[in-house]
Image (cartoon, one colour):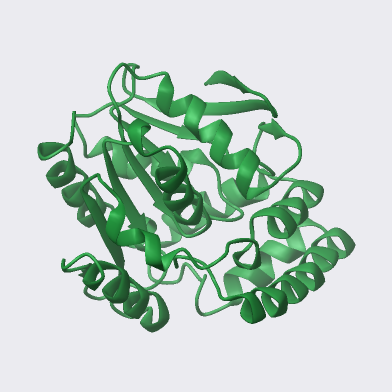
Length: 263
């Protein structure tokens, strides 16, 4: 791992392959950069996978979309040419906001299982729900919360084998209640305004991806892709956890994007 400094603190980055990174990959809520190990193994490209604020060893204050975007920008800037930026779920929200804020640092963009933000009324409702969930994490602790999180049909890992499920669970348990609560409060869905109107203007090659069985996010991927006159990648037989369930499908899209990366 390496440490990348930003104005907000330290971001710790896992490396798969030799730097500089050709791909920067942002994990989902309760996970860490290690979640991309299987996808990275299938690529010839070098992958950098930071632990986002509130997760792993990263120490960023405040934990917010803005501080996360600025820290990710520092990771991207460490490469001599703009890398592909990949994000999954919470990481995809951050990836999309990074591409909108620092477009010259992003060679291409892959958004997996995410939205472009919420209208104001929905944001208020979601922030209230996330605040309640953050309070619960602090009250019951990481182990019990992860048990509940993985029992949710959307975030469950039952589609993969027992070994993969256990590795995924161990990775999630390697976080703190304080950190996960802060990530919900500062980087949850209620923290991102609707940016759908800006998606057509993204200058880099961009793919929106989701699992076919994840109805909500498959529809969102279709809507975002159609706004650019493109088709989404909807992976058959997978749910929300596309990276865990279909690493080869993710790797295939990464290879395709790298082949048409902007300079």
